[in-house]
Amino acid sequence: MKKIEEKQLSYTESMEELEAILEKIENGEMDIDALSENVARASILIKACKEKLHKTNETVKELLDNLDK
Image (tube, rainbow, N blue to C red):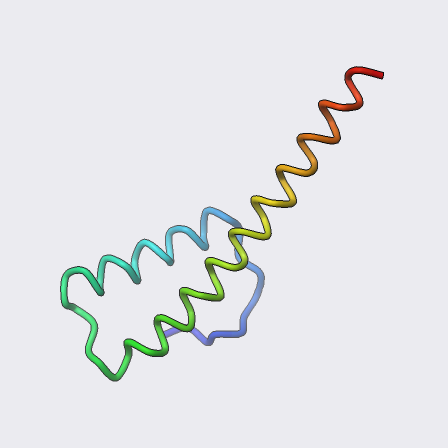
């Protein structure tokens, strides 16, 4: 398992890791000892993805607003 605190991942890398965690949970491949660590990791990844989406949305809005000027 990767450390919870580590280098900043791209949005795509974060989503891939989230999907892998979810797949293991859904398929019953994750033992109970690893569950809490993986859920903590998933929550960090979700927060990072939300922040990246928000920043991208703001950038796109700004760029579109500048087209009207």
